[in-house]
Image (cartoon, rainbow, N blue to C red; front, side):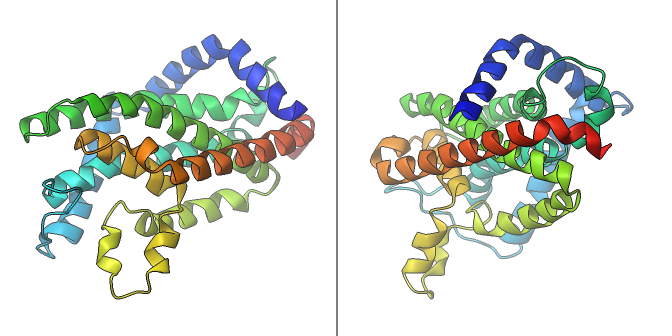
Length: 275
């Protein structure tokens, strides 16, 4: 618990530094490209169109049943979940390598290493906000207007951030000690895309036993994706009507954070030895 409190205090104390450095990192990541930061929006757009073409257009998939009377086209259903997945994927990958890729810099700087994963996540969070704004505009012109349920997007963005930070705190520590962890994570997350409810609704698993889709719904990413879709399509207060999943999500997030904070504080004094 002391380690967790230490990490939280470091985030609060250096919050201004995190914001400033994350903006610099976001700009620096794209400074050599002719289109600059536009690629942060173009790349996810291209990926989503490819997934729509493969899993929607080629299969001539029917509209997806979200709630009684709400059956959006597969493209909009995919879009509502993909923005969450791309934020999670990019942030987790960047967060996992955030410490060991900056060890030489960290050896010369005087700020806590626990803010480094947060810095990587924050730089992706700006992109997430821009993508979410574009999605809201697209949904508006498609007939899914801004509604009261949009307020829960604030909660789900916060929940996404907390979960990614907790996970990144663990993986960034392990990948600094064992570099293969980052490669394993990248392969695992690409596979996890197909089990997170992004590309196809779990309702198509009707040929499997009932416990299979129910087990897959325990995935924290599925919880976040479902929350975003409930807000964008204006169907329900997802985190209230599905309070069991809400409790499970925060239990998993808190446990991951406690573990991550513990091992990070324990090993960070030895990180420079891995140079």
